[in-house]
Image (cartoon, rainbow, N blue to C red; front, side, top):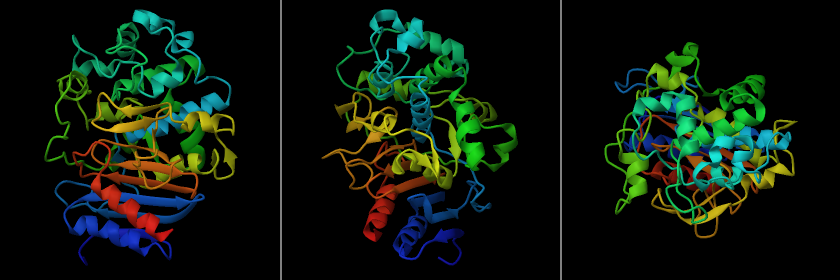
Amino acid sequence: MNSLPLSGVCAQGFEPVRNTFAEIFTDGSERGASLAILIDGEVMIDLVGGYADRAQSQPMTSESLIPVFSCSKAVSSLVIAKAVSEGKLDYEQSVASLWPEFAANGKEAVTVGEALSHQAGLCAIPDDWAAEDWFDWDKTCARLAAMKPLWPLGEGSGYHPVSWGYIAGEIIIRATGRTIGTILREDLCAPNKIDFWIGLPDSEHSRVAQTSKPTRMPNFGQLNEFQQLAFMKPWSSPGRRGGAAWRRMEIPSANGHGTARAMAELISIYAQSGHLDTALMVDETTLPMATKKRICGQDRVLPHELCFGAGLICNAPGKLVYGPGLRTIGHTGFGGSCLFADPDTKVSFGFATAKQDAELVRDDRVRRLIAALYDCL
């Protein structure tokens, strides 16, 4: 225990959370991570532990950036909600009203809210595609716009691991003239000194922690065609993950880099009635539309029954992913990183891990940390 690099802030009364954070290192579950918990915007926990490199020679610090994969979707959802709040976009308008090419092959009625809740039937590109093609934004968006849905529209969700970011990102470009990463940086992060990036400048690459891949495959049960396309094909995800091109590219679904503190600060907007500190980011009309449960049930891609909002995973009775709150929303990233907001307790939570696990939604480390947190409340 004495040799474990672990530092940061722990408010009185939250020592069990700090102890649990230490335990995930000492029992071998973790190698390098950061954890942050805010209540009503005030920091209760801001901890870093372990090592930023696979050789375990460089301690993780508060400046270490960790790639948090699909946690990026929840951050991107804030940019979208802000655009809706500003009257530049509507969840109920059709995607094609902004992006006419998207109407191809029967998708003319798909709404922005349906697309953001994984109901557009475009969870993957089925053929004639390469991992490198994801690095061509226009080519990818044109392919998705032209595609026929992979299942009949209106028949449930199928999680879009990578393609979600291109759909959401092109919607924002068409609505605002700026990218999700640009709005995030200029309007949310830079003015508030929040260390989260979608599209990481070269100047920040030296701070990125090395990730360790899972030692086993996710448990999908009996693989279906949608899971195979979304996760198992050579082109299912972009190539060069972890390289400079991957970090530099804006992929709003998948390549956000940040600290746990930054994740908790951003998601706190959903816990604080749309505010970031005292500034209103999402108005009271938009907030319930951003967080409402748009589709619930067995997902076609993830092996779980889930409820999705507009870029968010929502707690629901019998489907509690992030603690006990029925209004809690958040997202998990590949490998185990996680962020969520609980508006009933005003809690916001960020966990970023460099040691990836194979659980797709309910990582055991996060489960233990959440249990310790709610025991303290």
